[in-house]
Image 1: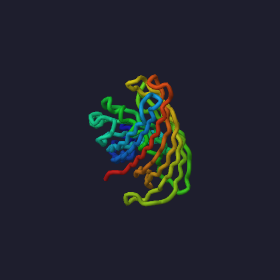
Image 2 (image 1 turned 120 degrees about the horizontal axis):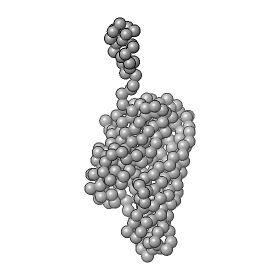
Image 3 (image 1 turned 180 degrees about the vertical axis):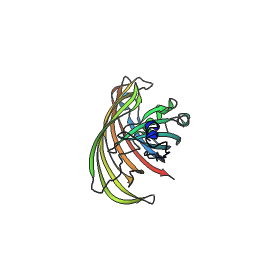
Image 4 (image 1 turned 120 degrees about the vertical axis):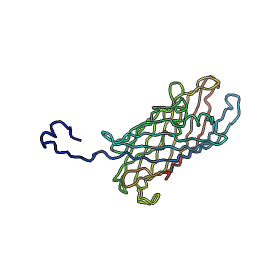
Length: 261
């Protein structure tokens, strides 16, 4: 809005009420369902082959606000829960409620990683559950559009952090209807590399490896994210003082995101 001083004197104190040029923030609630199966061969450390499978569901509120060069994104955890096999304690998931993460979506549609901005220490422990749920979106997508992207995201902090680098190929594949709205289905194929460290009872563990994945998601005509799903498989090795040789790990993960009306 124009400044009061100067403008009023020019119009002899005529009162004008100008509409705001800023668009109202977009607020959407999502449900994020994830399943993960991990197998580790600990025979080199005198152990056995171990396998764990678990499922989690996260409910979040996402606010997108127009900002210079794109949109600011704010993610608030409404609730999280896991099944009985989930290695993250239920108390941690409960404590994550109300945690806030912030990021940015560039004008091109590329999202940045989410950074913890408020909440207890539980927020950092569940950050990995949210790190990839929000994809590349923008208004005006047309069938046949394609692009590539490279990202690097850090989950955790300090000695308990893992960096995932991903190279993705996107293509707007078809016009479809999603939640009674016209949408473009975008398909994604990606490859990834993983490197980092995590503390264990036997000492610090170094983790490294590679993975591949694919999925599809939906973008409304206004650029709104309408959900989607991905699957990925990773082959890793973990090494440390607990084993004379690196231990192989395989991980299969599935993520499904849906909007909540």
